[in-house]
Image (cartoon, rainbow, N blue to C red):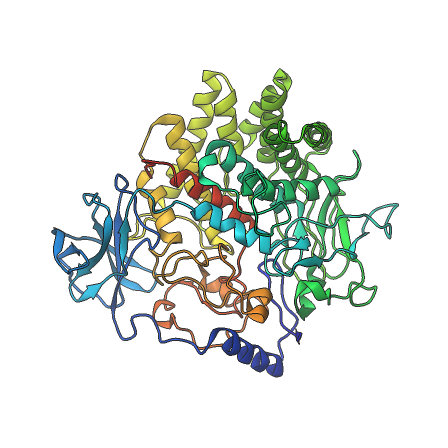
Length: 613
């Protein structure tokens, strides 16, 4: 049944809630998931937070104590399953307050290398089980693909049926062709709404292709191309990347027609499953969805407009995905790879002719992806075309674009607008390092180092996290870990390894709430994510990375957020950042497709034998 009046996704706002809808939603949550459990470590004033996925034997290993009241904690120890001390006692390191934590301590047990399951004990507190082993990340990257399969538009394996098959789409906001039908079925829903964006799809596809190119052993073949169980002779990550590529091709049907967005925030008027196509875009419920072209001008059909200035930010992302896809698939499907290569050239040329940003289009809500940079996208598109063709002008252009944005601008900042500098790390620098001469390799490595240093300067806290806690903060952590890993490979410099490790640890539970931010990974993870599919079907969205904590000031000013159950993490939501495992909180607990794909790259790298973070 549809619950009306609920707004949700991380990129827009809801219509005003009504009390009846909230009551119905709360009852549905209880029916699907059972009544809320007790607050974690209820009554305790000290919590030991660990990476719940585990630690590699040779990698750094740090747990963090979050004490809600100031108290001395001079030492800690590691115990085995029989409660025997196997490491320590070792002195703790006091690292000051952070968020709700009046005091934090870093508990470094990197000296523990023997495989097994342990617990960290400090004072009267004990951690969740801690796993050490060479295989702790095996299969983790593959597990994230489950969320992407659930997000599919067109044929969706969860429903064993097609969603939006007959509704996509009607061209809108075009100077001469508005109202024309454009067949663009496919791709992935961006988050828990059903909007689809070229920019996030292209980035996600790129990260999947990079993950397979560099870490193919991390992926298996257990699913068919349509997402149903069954091997088909192709690694599942390539099946998923091809799903993204096929939709991007539909979104670039002609050399001069680049499409950017399918659907808009009118989708949020209905809390309903995608198979029902409940949104009314002006043609009645179940009617066509609008598809927006890149025009290079501000867009928005109703009260709000974006600040678009060009086509390059979207065109560069498409070019990179197409070029990488052509290289990855040239032996598996020569004809498809040739088509991708031709489209990569064409869309790159379109971006070069129209510099500037193509932001997503708002409708009746004020929220949209406010991307302000585009040189990084054109850099990546140029260098991937160089890798594919070995034509020198592409490398020359890539270096020129790299000099325009040497450091991704959010790094070192304490805030940013929604998706203002996207993607949150620049893959182009790493690709230049792979393909370019020594002088270029040194240059781009230095660019990465400057960005990492800016974040590290802000990370003088117990969790060693220096990102701004804006909307989708987990995206920034996944990107920081990606860039730091690139930098270590490029330079053999481990200066930022502590911060890289801390970013991954945070995502898997070493945070004030003790929550793994990936559904299904770890011990404590989101049980009531902001997802109508999860809520109405009683489905665990395995593999989805949720948005993550935000500044309290952001949470309190977003439209339409209403918690529908008691806050089980209330003792840890008293500081400047908050997180809620609540279906009503679209700002911190909504799974995100692009962040999930980015994290798949990090986890694929982590699964390598003897990988060091």
